[in-house]
Length: 621
Ligand code: GLC
Image 1 (cartoon, rainbow, N blue to C red):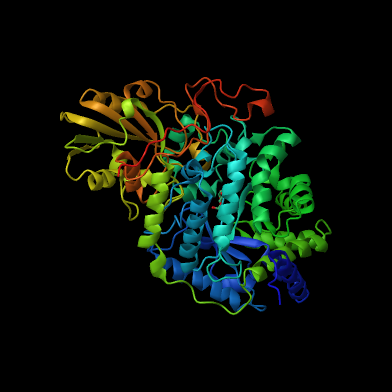
Image 2: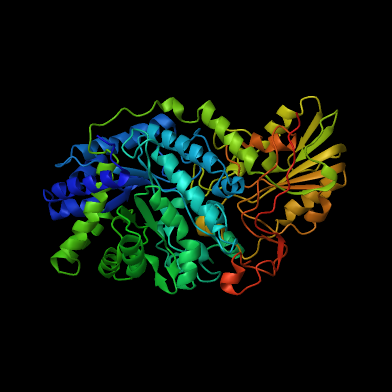
């Protein structure tokens, strides 16, 4: 018998879903459309309400935050759901956007902006596979990744979640990531459901159009309160937080289809079974209410047979009248609501909307059938399988893969006199900058907590560790603040952005912070040759630093194996990575338009380095 194709298996899953659907009460159906964050529900309530999914938002960790505690927590929810009347297991969802990044001591891979710089499809697929194994080992089966955003204005706080501004590359890497999460089959024990996000055009939101501030102003923003950012909120708002994220994207249908759509098309061709709707709007219509694009383009035209999940609290943001907001979004094509807090209100509201005829039972059945078909296709309704050994979380082989990715992601922007790779012969080296020896700064946002943070937040290595490993015969000094007096042959200054997530990372301007510029200036005076490594979630305006440095490297956000930054620096590997974002030369030219011809704007005005730029070196034998 010839093996069934994915399409055939999905069709069969839809047939099985229809049979299951016919046994369900209306409330059980609505329960499947409900996703709740893990602090807002108990396992018993999951069973009682036949809940479809539970999630950990950014930082939604158990206490203690350990791989085993994660496995115990997730398993308690999954097993409770298996004892509901029909025994339909939940999907447990996490944001494992650069490894299983909420879990302490998991492997943290470079953020997508670094993976995009590698352009390496096989590497991305291997990283997704490793991520899927670590996610599976903790019992979760759904990863809210890959983001396939095409960030236009890099002042956006989610720029680093994108692979780049090159649509073809983003489409290829999205496909690789989906295949990596799938592994041998969607029903295989270590397969994890991807959520391709955020549909559609999230990266095209324009500066100054975000609507999130309205919610903040109302003072009922539980998400911000939960994220523990209240105390610093004014500092972030002054810097530009929430000026772009969740804003309005404007463009032609041709641009949407040529630039934003291909990554979704390729991900669906690779078998993707879930898409997350975007908070943003497209030409003034909020995506969570955009029937033309959700039902029309994604489901009808592309033939997407999986299900659409909302973003966090996104449905209720559509309209101050809650029932109207919910009805509008479900009617537009959102199948599951990431509620995530007041789930009983959601279930009661949808039940009333159906009883009042404001939502058709056909639409409810369509949504639930899609959700059930994905669960069936993922093997969730088959005999439970043994989870991978918990020791796979943060394993040596995964860390080795992460270090390989770090080394391959480093973009060499300047290399005066072929300074790099450094020839180690009895060099004296001065390493400066806090980020040279700080795991948290190297990981960036979406690490252990939503925003990420500096410090030894998880097990990992630093750039300084890498320098020490490669230059054991050299005299090495480390000055986090660069306030010393030692002179040296070579200075390696690591400058950084403070970690951020989503709209908290939106900025009015992208200049290197003045304290970082001053640090480079101090070291410049004490070394013969100066190397500047930039740890950031996006290109930033370097100003005078670009002149002072003999060599400049975009290190991006390397993750827990930041020692890999030193591999090409000392010639253990080659520099070959390329920029996938235009690099602004000053503050005057935002947003740089990588698709100049598509938007009638000169794409290179204001660019220090274009997309595709990156100097190359040879490895030292
Ligand atoms: C967030 C993000 C989305 C994430 C979700 C769950 O607000 O927009 O990317 O997957 O909520 O954490």
